[in-house]
Amino acid sequence: MEFKQFGKDGPRISAIGMGTYYDPLWILTGYLGWQRGAAEKLGALKAGLELGMNLIDTAEVYRSEEIVGRAIRGMQRESLFIATKVMSNHLKANSVTKSLESSLKRLGTSYVDLYQIHWPSQTVPIAETLGAMEKLAELGKVRYIGVSNFSLKQMIEARAALKKLDLASTQMSYNLLDRKIEEDIIPYCRKEGLSILAYFPLAHGKLTKSEALLKVAEAHGKTSSQVALNWLADKDSVFPIPRASTAAHVRENAGSVGWQLSEAEMVYLESLRPPKVSPPVR
Ligand SMILES: NC(=O)c1ccc[n+]([C@@H]2O[C@H](COP(=O)([O-])OP(=O)(O)OC[C@H]3O[C@@H](n4cnc5c(N)ncnc54)[C@H](OP(=O)(O)O)[C@@H]3O)[C@@H](O)[C@H]2O)c1
Image 1 (tube, rainbow, N blue to C red):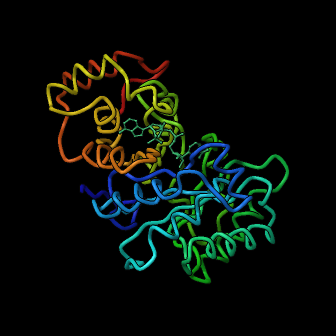
Image 2: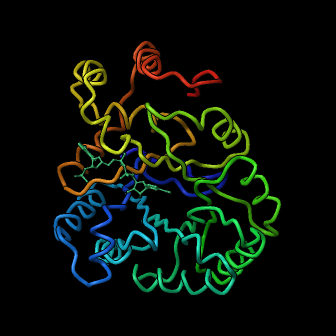
């Protein structure tokens, strides 16, 4: 596995992570205590961990923290980088604390490596949420603070509201078909040393079947998915977090790093759906 530095001064973590948002039925049945395909999903996570994919992204709303907890049980905690998220209706100070405690219980751990605000709030001041997160960090329950689905303006406001810590990362949709964040968020994060967790790295599965990517993939003995993920993981500050429900998919995704696309291939891939404004970011 290839490892890259997280944030400005964070640990080196796997260049490719594992996402764990499954589907609405999974979430719904999670409330009933029975989730279809749990054994297969658990096997997938364990396969990724065995291959050194130590970055796992979950969220209180995904109902997948329990399965992540089961996958990491018995592992050396320091070897892992567990990211979870607080949902947008739990952003008042008391709720943030309660949410984290519940997440820790479900994950079976005493701290999370990255605690992210899942979506910005329209009503709760950002300083209140971040103040609570900083307190949790002081207590050793959170190592790094991140956001998700924040505009650049909201990220700048969040950083200004933090008293002791800085934001370490943001999590945004980013893939070969959706390069909107190249306009502002990527250049800002690169300049300021923030990491980007790229969600929808396979465009929700669309890129796994791309004929255009297959042409490039075949030249490397790789698959379309591996090309799509390599294109993202090649960027210093970007960590793709594909969700994969089977061990076979996870193994394939693990093989998306440790090799390089040529400059000409990059140009070809980026010509498929060029960004609206700025030039490509590498
Ligand atoms: N912050 C946010 O608001 C937000 C929003 C959405 C998602 N996320 C995070 O980002 C993660 C990824 O997003 P996503 O799951 O929606 O989209 P995605 O990773 O772009 O695509 C997932 C789809 O690709 C398939 N897949 C994965 N690896 C494959 C492979 N090697 N070959 C063929 N198909 C493959 C999966 O199938 P199988 O499942 O059958 O393996 C699934 O159908 C989520 O799990 C979650 O952690 C965050």
